[in-house]
Amino acid sequence: MSDEFLHRPGSTFWSVLPPVPLMGVGTALVESVEHYAIRLAWITGTSVKRIVSLPAPFDEPGIRKTAMASSFCGPGKVYKRRIENLETLTGVKTIRCGSFYALDGVLTSNAVGRASGYHRWCPQCYKEWDEATSWEPLQWSIDLRITCPDHGCDLEDRCRHCGAVQKPSVRY
Image 1: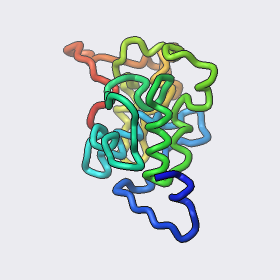
Image 2 (image 1 turned 180 degrees about the vertical axis):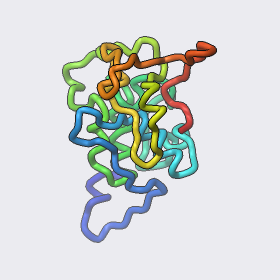
Image 3 (image 1 turned 135 degrees about the vertical axis):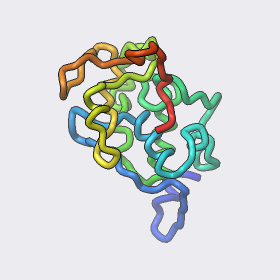
């Protein structure tokens, strides 16, 4: 189903995905598409894996691996198609703002330095977390960013107590 068909006057298109807006659009702390997909899965009572497995118009090419750093934010091979499909299925045309989509032509697949592939967070942001108004910013996915821009504390990628790590796509 083409995007042209979906927006033609008089055409009807229904999706199980609600038009949930990306948080922080237009700010330096825009929500990452990775977090958006996790939040969207939580809101709809499903999983990220199920969202990327939705039938047409979601026709993702290749393997459906969701636990990799570039799976929704980029750079990489599948993120642009995932973003385009999320935008089509939700009707939210700003989802790409939470990724490296605009820089795709100049970034290589390892350009943002996410070699570890682990989820990173600010412990102070999590301490102040509010389900209705909090989100994980795209900046947290860049290895060169080592501190939280709001709190100045180090971003963490493992539990302080047991040393456990999380993959990027975890349940909300």
